[in-house]
Image 1 (cartoon, rainbow, N blue to C red):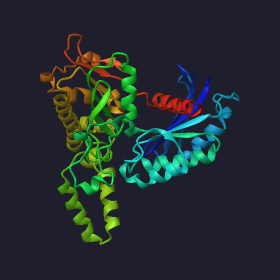
Image 2 (image 1 turned 180 degrees about the horizontal axis):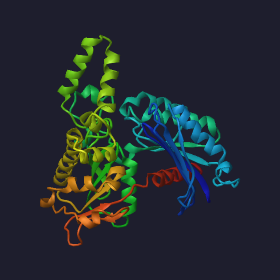
Image 3 (image 1 turned 90 degrees about the vertical axis):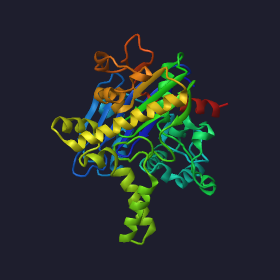
Image 4 (image 1 turned 45 degrees about the vertical axis):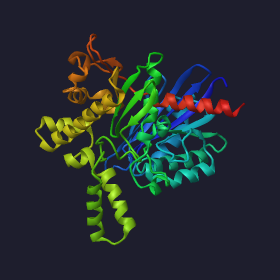
Length: 411
């Protein structure tokens, strides 16, 4: 399948990222990438941009995107009208295959695969296993099928990387009847973790910890390239404190909040929805700081003396440091620690604060190296544990999966 144009769509709770690659047996060439950010941000305008293969912005505009439909309309127009963004020259072709990031497929969908009506129906059953992301992904899948009805669509699961977790970490300590309903640890950010493994090849460390830190944050213990434990559980709400999510929390807190909600309303479904909103959209960095879930804004607030912002960031870095220590115990030592994701790659202060106190495990940072940008080693040359910053390449991993699935279906 030489020169197969593959479109990938990676949706978040407030963004749609998209890119197209020309894919061959051994080569991948980026044709374009773009994003709509700030979806549903009220009066604030969102951003819509597209870059050409040389990283030059050919579209860069502020747009009011009050909802997902208006955001996807921008993407749709761009995909159907490539020539208007390049002075009349077509810069990317009609896609021959399309890949969609889906955070979790539930207990019955564990493999990346082609989209079908039956698959969509099954994904709907477990939509609350990724409440911020899966409804968005399903909307985009449906819209893309309308846009390109003859083009095969595929799902690429974040949970795929964690599908073979050992039972001791996969099984959650709940009554068996809930386990039989599909309650288990699925994990997330698996496409990001896959991209780190791919970039480390052929020298993947035997004992590896990867911290994907962004508005959503998680960490994984990886032995010989395989996930053996990860911080997120049934849903992405668990584990590390994230931008708007609680992370791990005493279940008694949830029961207390639920009872308080039920005092105001005896509608159980409404109370459950409010609780989900509280732990997924109002908590984490936003909940503690009372102002924002954006690390850049929190850092500015700290400089200005905001104590709540300082506490929010301290809880974030403390929780990650705690997980790193636990996963070193799980792995029986550590060869490499990798930071990735938006915060992991761009916020040197967070990296320094996380690693402070981990010197007893051989984790030491070089301050000058830590201030560098991009793919860089930030530990001293003589450090017993290598600490690296590696930007994720999720789109490439999705393209690889789509290309493989297309090749398998043609045989």
